[in-house]
Image (cartoon, rainbow, N blue to C red; front, side, top):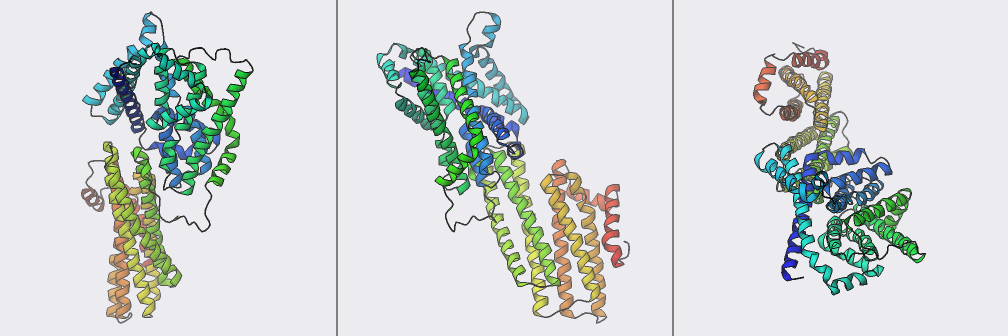
Length: 591
């Protein structure tokens, strides 16, 4: 084997890894932002989680990639350790798909159909079609399909290049001696683990072993320990990803390691036990690509089935290995935005959206509690409102920074738009929080100056608070569900709040002129109206953005002008209902 063969081997490996990466990326993009919601919905039982982990890993072609995503979701509090264990088990099964694809190159025969089924025949065609879709079409879906096909073709091109590079090794006594040495189970497992750690992919290391099988030097006795070691080596990526993560995330990474180490030990013991009993007659026979793929699949399926009843034991081991330290406080108030998810932008975007949803809930809670301080002022409630506002400010900075980092990744047009829209939503909810603090300051001023409101003014404020709270609830629900129909119900309610505030200002100015209210109380009352109206306006902005996302060419100002001109029957009916609910009880004209 010459230096040029080594160059070819390195180039083939590079193509193999690149093809596997872009194929997985294309599949992930094609799935869009559904990955996280699927993980959450389908992990209610261990068997479901195992199946899900196998399917996802089979699609993205990387057990390490799946496990790193799981570590990130556990770190973010989306998945529990028990849910994560099932997915991790399934990931080991899913990673065997690559080996099963590669075995297709062992198809032999000269018939037309058999020739067509050989990867050497169809993979260049698949790659060409993929290149056409990726380069010449603008549709994101077609480009993603093209990327998948292109990756598939590149993967096999790399495989064939590696095979050609290692063919001279079949005549090398040194190479044959090396694989004879690797029949030692400890050395074989260590070699498989180290190669996988070096290239960060058990699928790729299995591919390399399948390429080497073309030399005829790979026997069952030398390959089995290597295959088992490769499963241990793939744990390195999640372990590195868990550095600096939460205790639960570290436990999910260590579970992956325990699962593979214990499984390898048990399986290795069983295999060598069968050999000692004379039940392994083909121990020294050559292993081909299909044998390697089948053994890899068999090992992972059997070990997973063995461990499914013992997930709690694995969790117990992880908890004992990484205990919770006394006094360790997990900051449950701030959402965890895990940068480990950047390899899957769709999942990272969903994490950011979840965090913005928390902003929405906290801003709405602050408005309701701040308004409640007018009725009965409580210092502890004031502290909690201020704490929540500090969190809102921190969240604004944290989520904005996270979204900007996401925008540096390779995003689809839809994902780029999501980043832009989420940044705008963050601004809306942060402003709602600020106006709620203004309302709290009004309540504090009223307490400190011992200001009182008339019975009528209190009734007016009570109905105003209820109207704005309903507006917040509708806008929050529309944002969470991305529901344009629900968002459309915000605008008539917001218009009713505007009309209510205008009418209450006029009414209160009349009370001031008549001397029925003090100047100080009047100023506080008018400030309350202004801040409540501003909160309602920001709810309207949120709703308009959600409606606008459904219609790309929607002009928000033109839409609102049309609504106020009475051109929309649904809006007119909603406004009439809101007036009847909130304005009519106050005797406001036109209700």
